[in-house]
Figure 1: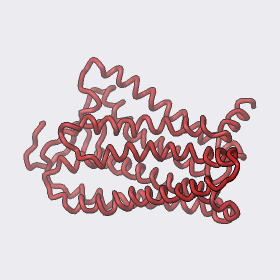
Figure 2 (figure 1 turned 60 degrees about the horizontal axis):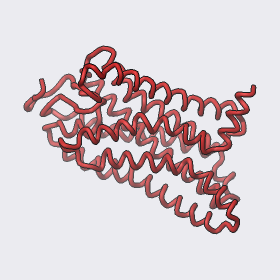
Figure 3 (figure 1 turned 90 degrees about the horizontal axis):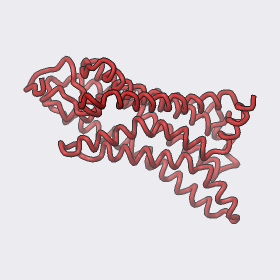
Length: 308
């Protein structure tokens, strides 16, 4: 059923990371290890922030939300590989594929907006320290986080409505390890102009470019403020407080740019798949590592809890 000409489909075939039978056990063990590390690292961040009152502030509140997003995003994508390796089945129903697209898209948009909120928090802490406690009250942070979660889950609905209207597909084989919206659009033989327009104007501009510009502008002000600090130790301390967040931002935007801004051609499908794997597997692991290794507050909280 590799080629389906002008017909609807009831299921998709996911090619996965590799179709070589001999490496399936290795892939399963590697993905399982990655998933367990993702769960362990992000759950550690969540527990530390919840249990240690020293971390009860806006920065770590948003970090908790980021950890939840990372866990959810990894679960949505990596579980597919684990199930395929265990059962040997590469089929997913149409409804399951649509659900995977919906949740993955929502969590990705959520992560971008949550990182933007974290950049604004750093901007207020460094550039407007006298107004920080007033503007970044926990009540305001809760409202912002709830708005981000609600917006990202509601915003993806129009995309799903348009995809559900696709009447036919050129093929039901997805050369990926999960159902990705760009791959499904490429397979459709229906008119995708409305979805393409929505994806560009609302998806790329509002949910991607706008958060990037806000983050970029925030860091322009942050860097300008840091450079005005006279002492080198003061400049280093101010920059060090932002370095973890900046590292995560660079990693995420770099992988997403390579994943979605490059045209999906036959020759670079595996290339695109590699960036997807890094984004969905490596980045969620790196986030808690970056924040724990580069953040003195998190390391201090971990030491206090280990001593108990």
